[in-house]
Length: 114
Image (cartoon, one colour):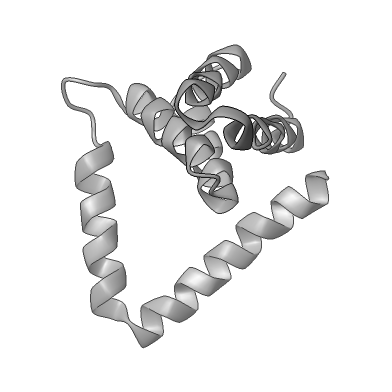
């Protein structure tokens, strides 16, 4: 599973590079929106990543789960914090969200986060 997760990150980066060449204005605009929304403010970056991760789990977006799990780790979140944040999504997403929690644990495992 670790290779699958690592392959995802490599493939995602390659696809965004290709998209940047084909649609540079769209990529630039989305990156600007992302950076503005996720920057430190009244809420810290870690808290914002928890929100994004919860939405990703509730929305069943596997790429988003992988990206925001990694970003939460990068913002200093522990495995326990990330799993608790992802678990809140169950309140809003029910069973379908529950089936996406393993994507979080697989990603953390692949990153070596215990």
